[in-house]
Image 1: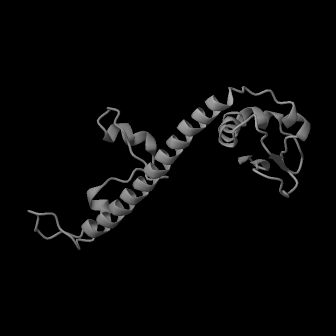
Image 2: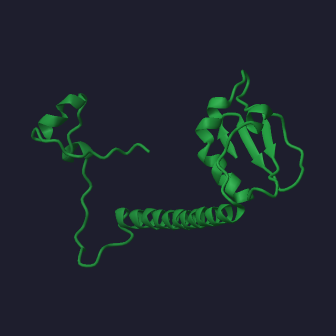
Image 3: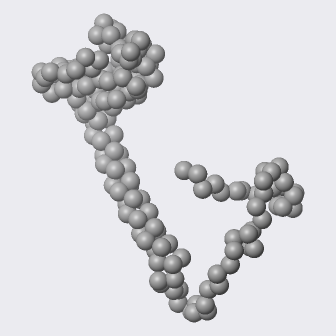
Length: 160
């Protein structure tokens, strides 16, 4: 799990070799792996405050070992982990759906704006005009209010 530049904590199911800068945890029978994963995510800011180092940030093994954490009974840990895992799956599927819809929008935008596809009931020819003939270009952003008639309106930015 990547917490910040150079701060990495790994939760393993068995002994493994990791690189320097990693803090590797192998949960005992008292704690559920997934519960520990979600718990560590909520402790990210606290762990970052404990991190130190000049080349890269690292949380020392001592600080990790002495970190006090809340620990419910194992059956409650499993229930919490299952709920959070279900939500993660839901969000993952939602992200996939959003990506699919964005792809559909991009393709449809291209089809409609290039006139390859026309909307039903619209068949007039499109004109070709200079952008400067249909929009004012403002060198000074303070003049925007004058062009908006003094009222404040939401302006959408193209920056992403």
